[in-house]
Length: 317
Figure 1 (cartoon, rainbow, N blue to C red):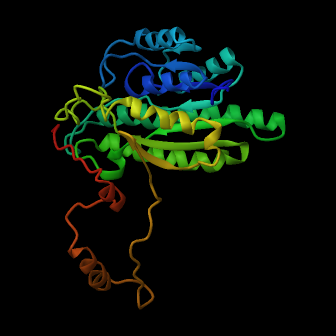
Figure 2: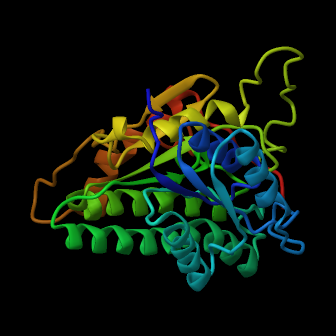
């Protein structure tokens, strides 16, 4: 029996450590040839000198297991380098079939203390980085589809976060970037569906260097797989990248510890209509104030509350 991703090629960004590493290993295990992209800076804030070490280590692990992989150390937040990343996959494997966007950094700070650079850096790596690779991969698939006169195989898996769903007080830059990634994903899904390409986003919960503060109080179990291990997330990425997920498009899924939750798009909870041509302040006061009177201050999305996903980050002033 052939492997689910046999004959397919993939790019995984931020694949030198944590989630990206687990995802690259899973795609290779399922048969894909993988470009392991990682800029290699040691700091989770994107600081330190770039290094080929993390990407090369993952490539060596894939090859040792009998898989096919090549390293790439380009910075996905740079438009030109992101284009070179996509071109490297095409040059190495003849085409690109799967793009997993995972690269990111953290620069946490409360909104009243955040600097312009802290905002720009996180938006650039997360949101612009997702756009950059998506843009070049999408152009590749469109050109192939036009040349073939039909559809092609293409899968995009983007990485959002529960920080977007439930709010994260000390991460306004990160939460905004992750929300933007969901918007990018749904727009891309609609634009590329006619070419046979799907785009979905995941909100993973995993213990990595990016989340070491969030899960500092939760110890790893002495035996068995850690519920917060990245290996719990990787199988969903492998599924979304596979032919089996052809009908899954424009979706947002939360995943961790043996659980996958399919999120709904925002729905209208209540509607109020003016009894005249346009609302007045007094009319809105009479309608909306009672509606919110019994809700806790700062309550956000109901979906996040149902899943019990809320976790604030009040540190970092």
